[in-house]
Length: 382
Ligand code: SDX
Image (cartoon, rainbow, N blue to C red; front, side, top):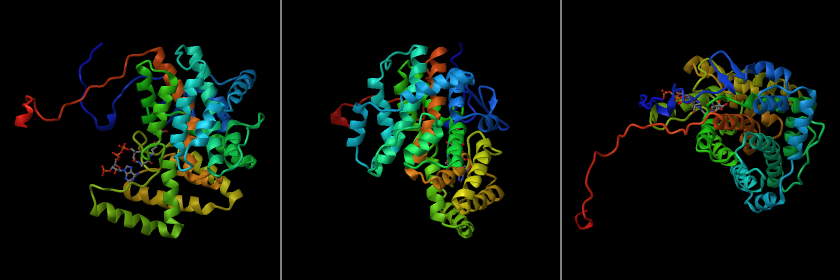
């Protein structure tokens, strides 16, 4: 096995850092274990997709029933966890709440320190239920509102939306929420998944790997972009302001080349001709606007998208339409990235299990660019 050093690439751009059978991201397709994302989004619920990622196959009716039962059995948090959450300042960022909750859940999970595949499959299902529960719990707690329990007959997406807003979602909103979880579930070696794999490669436990992944996803360059994109829409205000807003940003960036402002929800390390998920999600958000009367967000987004394409040839990523879809559903903006966690926990767990199955510790090299070799001088001479 050769250990020669590959050439340095900033951000590991273009570097193949491993092999996976979980997901495949190319310029022309996004597949989860061989299934196209558009096919899954149109023909499977998130729970079916979650089963595919965790257990490698789409479930039949009986397998789906048992899987839903096991995930829903975990949709209540141990009191030891809610006691800690209740003591947190309400200003705590929800992503920090989830990071802490997952870390504590590791203490109370009977298989917390057990890295056997069967144990990790069970932990994956429990975390899927618990993280959704924690997201709803914190959303209600932020507003001093009573916790909402899941409906055993509803989909995971419908329940997540109801647990956050405290209201029974419309059939369309519930279906769109569940569909966004399908779209967000897996994306190969993105920063948070690669973080999870790196932690798993040291043979640390699943809760440690997921805690690290949540930390990585929080950043505005990664999962945090869906919240930043909605703040961007709110600051633009209306479609007539888009052109001036863009021109002012361009003028700022020209005058401050070392302190450029990004347009959140645009660009992608892999997709240079558009993010397959973004177009699907934008259409769902447009359908939603027929119920909510909030089509102005999509008009604004479309205008900015056209300018970015015409002037910079940069396409939107999935966080861009997720912003206005979630806003129309009445979800508080700080919960947008936690929703990403509620979905991506399935991809993360699939990758963590895969890493354990064929592991070599992840430890890349580096090019030293620091001070040349030198000797320590006695302190009297420093
Ligand atoms: C996700 O990796 C994944 O798969 C992630 C994800 C997943 O499902 O896990 O798809 C989810 O994280 C989507 C990305 C969400 N992040 C954002 O929307 C934040 C804004 N986007 C940028 O930060 C950026 O596009 C990244 C981080 C997404 C990609 O970074 P790269 O590949 O390092 O690209 P880059 O920063 O080198 O940009 C190349 C050029 C630069 O121009 P120059 O400085 O060379 O002249 O394009 C410009 C950038 O300035 N550019 C942008 C831009 N994105 C890239 N300019 C303005 N606004 C932007 N959003």
